[in-house]
Length: 130
Image (cartoon, rainbow, N blue to C red; front, side, top):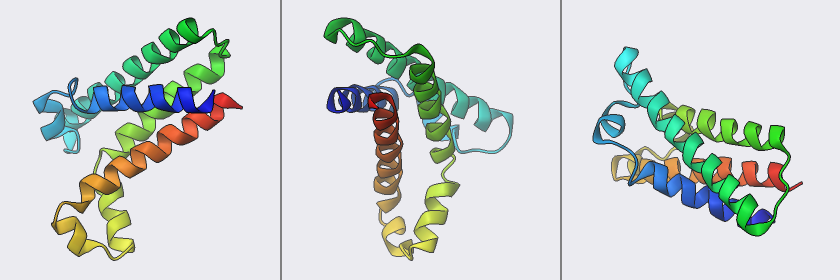
């Protein structure tokens, strides 16, 4: 069941990060102030809704009996971690600590960002599969 859950959460992540993320969210989700936080929360909420929907559909289609509270906790975890990672300073901080400033200057931050998201999704899938 882990593989199926992880796959659905990853598809949900891709949907929320690309076709369902607005230009406004992409441009402002890491910004300071109300505008930045509103864009970040809206984008993270999209992840919560899409991943929650895919888990519900997967449960019905595959006959899973996912416990409600852990499923809700996992979806909230996805939203919170996604919003945190997308503030951008955690990725920049990691790349500074890991001495990856050169790679960051040449597009590496996007890869580290996506790796952090996939790690959070994997932990969510593991938690729900136990």
